[in-house]
Length: 148
Image 1 (cartoon, rainbow, N blue to C red):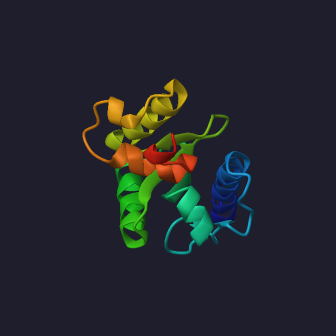
Image 2: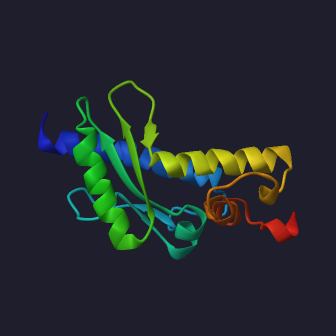
């Protein structure tokens, strides 16, 4: 595959993930979630301050038939540390869905936040290993335990 074709393929995956973010976070615009130029250093989606608050992830996107997951996660972690955001790797190959890799602890905290929100329980009524659920709930749903 020519370099220009590979870059275009990667850019399409970035644009697809950008559109997913904009669909799920309707208060954000394309100016808030920008696809960076191919070959530039840093994350693949550049987030404005408002976008980082709503979607606190450093996003690396890969569109490859054979993905070295560990190398990709290392790259994602390096970008996230610089930005102070949670690492998120989005990946796909030809004719497949787009998938996301997150740290397991973070993923389970998200599931706990959603479960808590849907069940109507206060997080204080649940056993929680730390304040991460409350912090995530405030970031993602715009409410705290005091407002429930």
